[in-house]
Length: 210
Image (cartoon, rainbow, N blue to C red; front, side, top):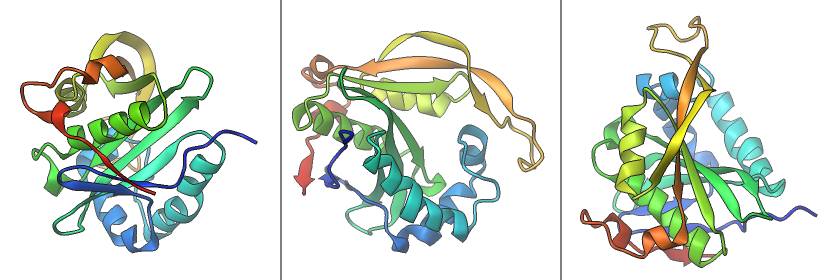
């Protein structure tokens, strides 16, 4: 039987990272309608309620069950509004390493939610699950994602040439051709979280809800 992550929730200062549920359907559709999400992610365009339900009921549970990773909905504690998604993928259980991805809703950008969520997951991985490496891969043109990586204290390890595919920035992405892109590889190790960052992100601690 493949190793897998437990179904759990992680609480940070402002956010709750939890399993997706059917109540997230409308929020997921709104999230995926954003231009930046369509440009830099592989979500279908248009992303419908059917796609959202399939993500909630099939894709996310399947990711956890087969040991590949886990998908978290990210919600505000105060309003319970869906801030975005954080997922772990390409998990190597022997190396205790995995890759993290994140999507932030348009209305929630600029509030520091993405680095807070990524650091909450990193702390959980290192302190609770015994992981030793967390990777982020950001498209060369995705400046916002690169800023998130920097705010978490992640270390840039170099460029993976022509290693990713994005839709590009055409107005109608349903007909836009795929475009190859370089990916910047970032990493976080347990020792990278030992020293608090000057902006305070590394000081946030998670609370686990099994």
